[in-house]
Length: 457
Image (cartoon, rainbow, N blue to C red; front, side, top):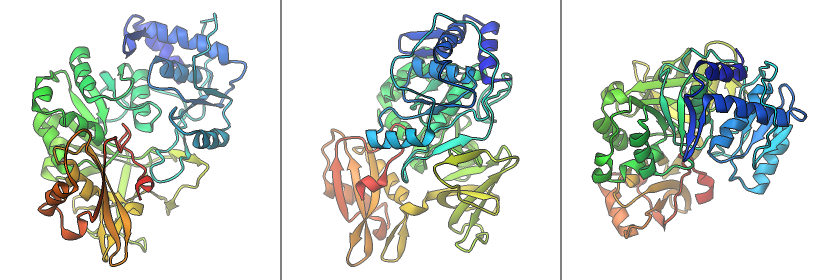
């Protein structure tokens, strides 16, 4: 059925059940259905079937209402970060050519009656993360329809009290929050991510499922044993983490804390052209792996000439998925070779088909002829108790061509470059050790875990 009709069905089945909660604001399923109708009626003279509606709002009930109203008009929501600079925002809006830009208070009508049952040909059109360049629009090939009794994915529960910890304008939080809401999840939305607030919310709202990125996991872990140990997380059936490579020490710490059966990892892109999954038990047997293909996905690792790499050999990760295309780009061309897609990541695969992701191909630092994966350096630095986050980038070096430069967020800690250098000495090979440093006291990564390395080169 259409996504719009699915929300009405949810309201009919359990009108007083909570649909969305953000701070002190609560919407029941009936209220979500009726209020989204009123918003849709207010937009009806400007938004038509298959139009794009750009939604540049922060996390909150209004973001959800705007999306539901868009689907009820048979249009496609195009989530956009409200934090973008004017130039970048203008470029994306010009590319999207939406019929409406929603970036302030929602307009409403007195008319809360149902709208005609329409389904857009594309259910979402987010921008890419922008971590490797100017964002582009990723238009989902799937129409705006849903099986309200179906399952989002094999690694997502059918029913859940879902903590939405990440920004809804980002692809993964958007997908899991909205698909969850359509299929019966109760959403508890954080206005912004705060590690202590997240733990407190899990306890108070009896959260059963959430999606996190390694940056969030790191911030929660850095709260310390006293804070973390005092939090009641017994309601959590499982957590899903994705979005970036997770340092092995951090992954193991979370498995030790929650148990391997409650920690699931997925590797995928905004485009959904391939998904790999690994359980905590599987990870303990193969530390560092992101798993094997699920939901009809296949993965290979290839050399520069396109031939398949042997088990354990580093190369480019390519993927494909059964069925029709899952996406198309607006403003860019997809990189597809003989039906195989790439996210631009390097990695390797073992003999049993388990995939290991190393880093972005474009981010590799070549120092003295040796290839250094920035994530290896960052993982070691972020294990230091005084480090909140770190970014490794290349700097020009007359002798080596490139050398590793580390930008390190130490928050309020008092730690020196010499101490950090000593920390790396016994933990990193000589070519991986930073030769230059910059210590800062502000976060380097967004709540999504993304970073623009070009800003630090």
